[in-house]
Image 1 (cartoon, rainbow, N blue to C red):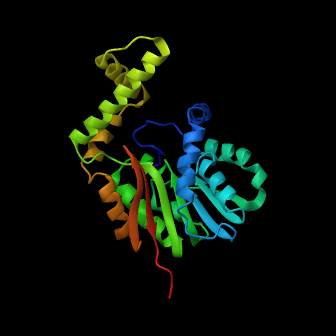
Image 2: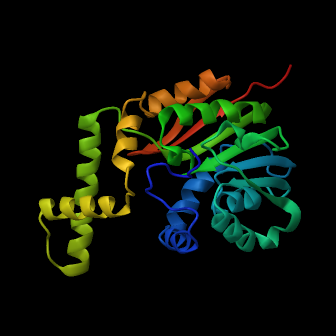
Image 3: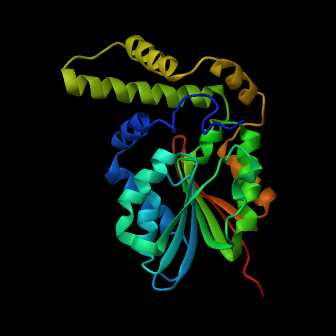
Length: 261
C-alpha cells in the first residue's frame, strides 16, 4: 500500500485538494491545541532541541515548536509533495532551522535516511490517516527508536470509539451541533434525519471506489482506541505513556523515554 490515505477520504497528492483542506482549518483553535502539545515537551525553551514532525503537512505544528523553542532544529516529514511545498513557503522565515523529508507512513521504510535520534518527535492529525490499526501500532514502534533517552513522542490525533454506543453518541453530538449551526446560518431548524442524510452524502462523495472493502478490513483489526494506543506506545518501546487531553475523538497522547543514568 502506497497511499497516504488507503480509504480514499483524502487526496493529499492533489494541489487543489491540499489548498482546500488547509483553507478549512481553524487556525485559532488549532494553534491553541498545538501549543498545549508543545508545552508538554520537557525541555528548556532557551536550549537547543532536535525535533521530528511526523506528517507535518503545511507546517502548523513545526511553527509552534520553533516559536516556543527558538533554538530548535526541526525535520518536517510528510508524504505529500503539495504539503511539503506549502510548508517550505510558510516556514521560509525560519531559514535553515527547518529541513524537509518525504516518506510514506504506510511502509516501514519511511524512517530510512532520517538522521536521528531526536529529543522530541511530534505529530498532529496525521498518523490516523494510515487507517489500519495494526499500521498505526507499527508506526509507534518505528518512532520509538528515533527518540533519544529522556525524550518524548507527542501526538495530537483522532482515535476510534471503543464501541458502537459510544460512536453513536459522538455522531449524535456532531449532528446536533450541525443543526444548531444551520439554524444560526438560516434561521430554520433542519430535522435530525436531514442533517444525518447530508452528512452521509458528503462522506460517500469523498470515498473512492473500493473504500468499503478496506473499511471492513480495518474494522477486523484491534481498534485504535485511546486505551489501546496508550498501550501500543508502551509496547512499542516507551517507558511511560499517557493521554493528556481528550475531546470526543481528538486526543493528545505521549510516550516518554527514561533518561540514561
